[in-house]
Amino acid sequence: MDQLRFRHAGEPLLLDSLTLRIRAGERVALVGPSGAGKSTLLALIAGLLPAAGGEIRVDGLPVDEVHARRLRARMAWIGQGSHVFAGTVQRNVALDRSGVRREEVRDALALAALDGVAQALPEGSLGERGIGLSGGELMRLALARAAVQPDARLLLVDEPTAHLDPRTAEAVIEGLLRLARDRTLIVATHDPALIARMDRTIALNARDATIGTATDTPTDTPTDPPTKTPIVTPMAPPHASIALGSAA
Ligand SMILES: Nc1ncnc2c1ncn2[C@@H]1O[C@H](COP(=O)(O)OP(=O)(O)OP(=O)(O)O)[C@@H](O)[C@H]1O
Ligand SMILES: [Mg+2]
Image (cartoon, rainbow, N blue to C red):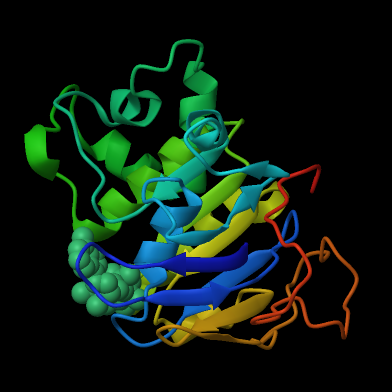
């Protein structure tokens, strides 16, 4: 992400000269006060909003009109706005992706700690608009959906633990970490428990970003050796990008 500038239509600049680099396999918490632009930045990375200046690259390719669609196929969006369709939990995980095998869905449900829910619900019992799923279960459904997308190497996650009780939040965090094992994770959050499990935090502070500090050492093997080099360099000249490469 290089010298990124963004404003919502008719609004003052929200992000100004934001330059940062996220490496393949990193788990990054995007933090900052409400309104700082965390969700906006996730949408920019996904190519859902146009930058006013500067550039975002994912895997070396600019997130622009030419590449955004192709790049989005390599991302998964995990947010609270997940839609539920009438049908079984299993079908809601696989969606209309052909070639998703039953076992993959079963594994995804287990990863997202949704297997119990799926078993408790009779066939086709999920209605429109999330009937039968709580907020936490909806978030876990989004996790399970991402788990059956092997091409989704970049996870863009917006407030996965907001409004969840601590136990459910912990289940979501565990699922997220398992999912992120061989993927790159960027998660917007205010949740200290989640921030503590990430490799690094990037603090957005409306129009600015400051160098975050790793708050915890991951329990599993880190994908990159620890480094003192600041990877988030606000206003720094080097070209920057998000790498999805081979983290596994
Ligand atoms: N579609 C939009 N049009 C105009 N302004 C918007 C739009 N979406 C967001 N904003 C504004 O942009 C700013 C950043 O919003 P954003 O949702 O990115 O913040 P956030 O850091 O995710 O906050 P929170 O922690 O509350 O989720 C806010 O001032 C918000 O009001
Ligand atoms: Mg937000």
